[in-house]
Length: 546
Ligand code: CFM
Image 1 (cartoon, rainbow, N blue to C red):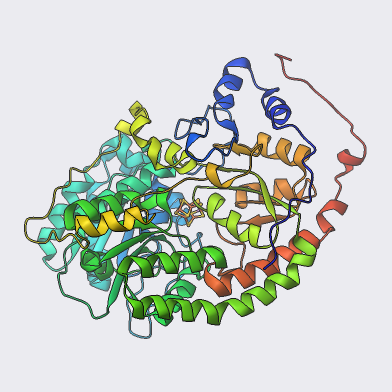
Image 2 (cartoon, protein in one colour):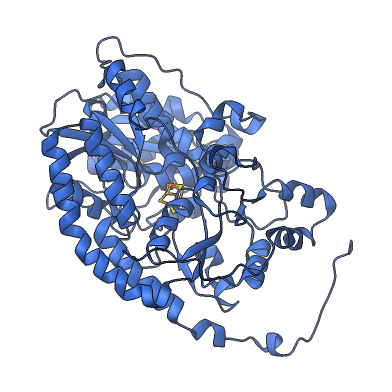
């Protein structure tokens, strides 16, 4: 196997780059941003502290989204048989209408409401006189048309501002229908500093209103839930293919390609495999406390990570039959991966990448780039918390601010009849002594090289500066960054929606990714593009404080 090379010599000093990024800011802003730009020491658990999950300074063009996006779009959006009704203006509704490219497979008979955009279409008069009646009518209309098993209501900013009581409306409708679970999410866009608050709100309500509703024991031997996989570009389909081949039964995915019943039955699984730690760790913790299901961190982005995660799942169950089958699957899948890797390595080895996505992916994709011999020289999250950078061991030291306290923490206790520890304390101890980690995420910093730059809540100005100075061979982020980066002459790959590509997860996904990145970093087309003012500057200006 080819190893990632370090042929590219680092020509810049990270401290100089940091100073350059901060130079244009007024002093107060510079001081604040300085705490969110970390020069990595790669000291594993002893990385310097980074400031994260704090408000963006007004005036800065952030890459972040809102709390409603995190709740409706991210966590609940991929579930196909729940009618997801947005209480708010049509713009908010339209925004979360499948723009994330989360796919689903209902089969020929299955219910699928994902292609619809359900909205109360709030108008000025609803803002003035209140929107509860309109919401009630919309829930009734959705029920009459579709008779779904569940209707979820999502609050947008104006709903919180005018004080519509969406929880009472939904509770009344649930009682009225009798055969349809109706509940609401107070996920107004302004509720938190980013999408992250929306994840937490969604986790709480799914746990409160759906998880544990179906005790029926599903067939299958090695039963897991896959948490934090959203089936963007078909990633979840590839992971399911691999699980099926290995003989692993996925009871519920939170929430790619999922159904209401999957959530309702998730407490019957024996292990929670957490892929995106940021968005769903709350459900993992609550399932453990209430039902005794342990959780482990996995990652199915990158063929090597996929193999590692499958082995980790097999080791948990500890049965030879599963361990052997997993090895067989890896041995079957890897030759094609290796051939594709060997092919691209001649062109991609030594090239560099920058990754700025919401959270997990800026970490997970580094392994995939490593497989191509590519180094990540700078990365960061839009909205992750310190533990996603520095590892979960810092959680007790994270200071809660008013914005975090604003988000409800559910008080969960062991279920009186259904709590069942899947592993005895002795078994957990034995696995732990053998180096097996439960309930742990080591974060991004420990996987990045010394001297790399880790930047929280990167903004448009800093992104362009960073690219200008460090000239990566590829920059990965989202649609808001795509064109401004391409204009700097650097190829850009969207890691949220995958442009129109994917899947990139699992073994087949890795092969797809190698091919696409190979083409992108090998193309010089963006560097030929020059705007007239780049060829010939016509105007220049300075800020007042300069
Ligand atoms: Fe988790 Fe995600 Fe991500 Fe995320 Fe997202 Fe996403 Fe993302 Mo866009 S749940 S944190 S809120 S891995 S939508 S599928 S790509 S920002 S890095």
